Length: 105
Image (cartoon, one colour):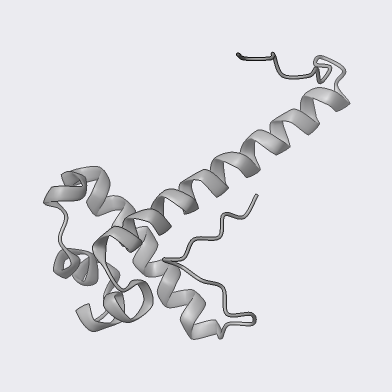
């Protein structure tokens, strides 16, 4: 599942350096948000942790809120991938049969 956010648009084929920088920024931001929360995390600290200039953070993500949304999307993508793999493994081992989701009013 790929979540497309306005804060982190996919402009088609992206360059290797851009992908690497975005990965470094998201990894650094995830650690800062986890340690200090949204309010306590700073773009400057995220930039220092990523080893990039603060301007790069703003260039790629425009704002702290948009960076936070990208971090959350990244985490959801990881969870979705892991849960998909676990589901396939369970189906292969015949320990789980998919059922329809319960209807909620």
